[in-house]
Length: 148
Image 1 (tube, helix red, strand yellow):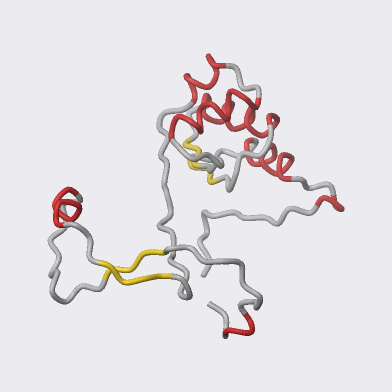
Image 2 (image 1 turned 45 degrees about the vertical axis):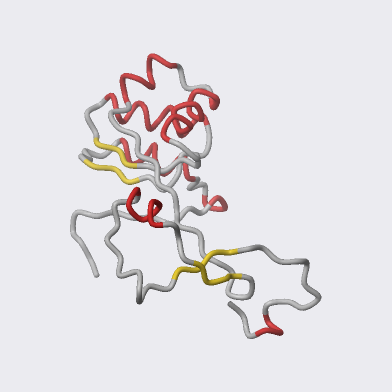
């Protein structure tokens, strides 16, 4: 699928096109929205903040467990606080739902107050709930058991 307004390039350090260099080149164009996969270092963080100051809408990711942690991480990278708070308009955190191990999970019935507190309406007669209970170190690997 091709979009005439979308531009994408592959990072190639051997040809001199690094992640940061590519973003620098992108800022020279008249872009309105920029999608960056991850802020990895101070140099790129400063460029992203600069793009935010020039009225470009920048979406990016940063590894952090919480919303506050994302701001702390940028400050720890060395971004000045006055630059950060003028450029960043919103921060959102997400937490992925863990999967239960198919070899050590057990079926259980949650307490009714847990379901009520979560605001869920569940047919408790037909629902099957599972949770991981942990297991001892195994002498076999996943391949010997047919994978996950």
